[in-house]
Image (cartoon, rainbow, N blue to C red; front, side, top):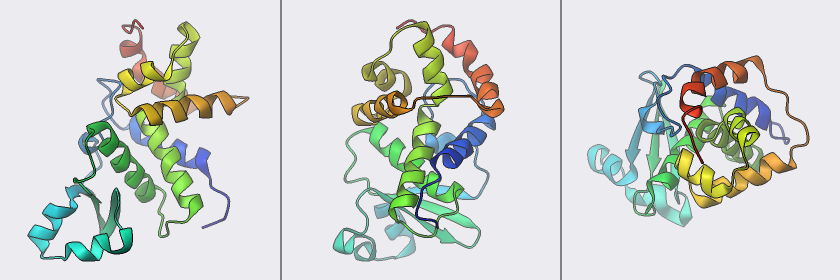
Length: 191
């Protein structure tokens, strides 16, 4: 992996994944995405129970705080630590982040890979073009994003900050296509 994260490429992969989905709500439940048979989600405790794997191998020295991905043949298993989650929104973010590692073909967990996985999760759960469309109609706050997209306050605040820092925005053809999929929902929203 290069030292410089390719966040725009990673976000584009999230847009491509969303384009393959049926959009019926602004909330993207990662576990319900159409991913084919190649990705499974499970809690680390359940995985250890059914496979006989040692929980210690995942938790030693803080190796598994939120989630991790293991590859078994051509399939991926995203494991999450269900002990640390008090919020389904936080769990959904972790699953989106791990899916970002998969879609980007990451083999390492360096800072660049983490930035790319976060960019993927951010775009998957709160698509930029959708937020910009909403913001063009009226001012939106992080609380609006939190409510509309079912993300944590921290994730919503980070997304608002990231979009404010970005000076220029030119939607890609895929992003415009994605906006068309969301428009029936967006036209009904009153903030």
